[in-house]
Image (tube, rainbow over all chains, first blue to last red):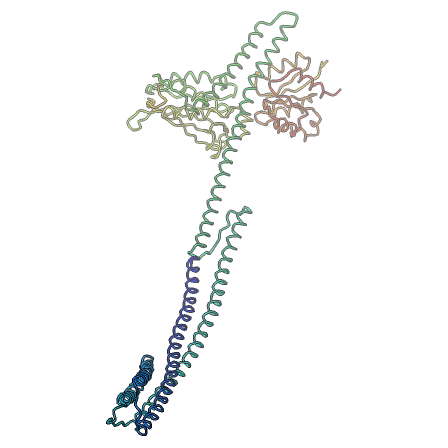
Length: 511
Length: 124
């Protein structure tokens, strides 16, 4: 369950309990007030009844005295006395009416009986006063029955009202006790429930936060594989755990990426350093000859005696040859740099592949002889003419053949040439095969990369900047073709170059 | 001053080999040459040169391996060896000395300096 739901539910429960408490309180107040009103009117009515009974008693005494006077003395009642008497009777009437106003449904029959009897009694008393001076008026005022009856009814009403008042007071007591009990129970339940909900909520939150904290600490200590497992909560804390796990994943991936990027950069850096070391090595070898011969010739010039002109000439030739080698090396480096920065351009011309390859093979003769290798040439009379960059074409085979020589000693080097159709276009295939040291699959995968030789040990043993094959591959691809290698350690190497007879017009061509 | 002292020059690059051999001869040394490490070990055993100048990048058996083998051989271990290499990094110098070379010279060779090193290593 989500945290928000838990909180809402807890709050609602507490609110409901609180509302019950408040409702009980108001209901209790209302009930008390109702009963109190009824009780008060009952008490007031009882008071009124007592007053009325007293007034009736007084009036009865007065009338009995007046009746005796009238019969014995013949006194007259003057206007003032009549008015006083009428006022007294009216006040009794008012008392009875007040009683009526206070009468509730339950005491209505008692009141009606009182009213009836009271009206008859008061009417007869009023008639007595008004006809007091009339000697012919025969009063039945002596008859006590109406008076007794009225008092009796008054007493009954009083009793009834007292009984009701007692009943009301019992109800009040009971209501107070009940509302007090409900309030206390509600209050205790609210406190208990709040504490219980708070405890569970706190325990749940604490446990969840503890797991998050542990996760954060683990991540902080570098354990990026740490995950908050089995988080079945679909609420906020579950979301938080999920977000946490996502964050860990992203963090791990980011760090892996950074590590990978750093490794790549380190590799590239190391490759460049190796390349620089190799370039330095390659430049120093011809420089050694150039400087050495020059210094030696200087020394010899300083010697007394005849100079051996033929020897001098031959030594100078060696200086020139080393200088040219140095230049070729520098050109290789510049070419590769041009290719890599996309500034290499092709100069397309039409030529017979055989002519160029023959020139290349002629140039290889000294190297072949040095390494005691035999070169086997094909019949290239049937090859179609080519329209590619002749200089790059020559460079490819110079590199491949000198490589073959470099890694073969006292063996055979085969150059093969053929042509075929691909997608309706004429293509040429050239194969340079040797019987040299060969290489394994891992070396084959890397040899076409710039700055990389099959192995540093090979570089040490066989020299080379590791640029030749990289340049070959770039040239082949620039001219729309490709180069592949097949080899096995100790079993020689076979380089296959496939080129379209006409280089496709691309961004590089003819520019 | 070096009259009659025989040293072995091991170098696979023909031009460099010829050049250095001539200059050493001019300085009065008697120079014999070898073109790879294997050949060098054989000649060290048979000719007992007073000193060896050894290129490190050699075919068949490279200079480092040849040095190590020479140092393990009771007959060859006392012959001083000066490494000649076109590798100019500090690590290259260390690797040559670690292989058992007594000294180290970087190509292009500073000839007077090389002669000083030879003199220092030759038995008095």
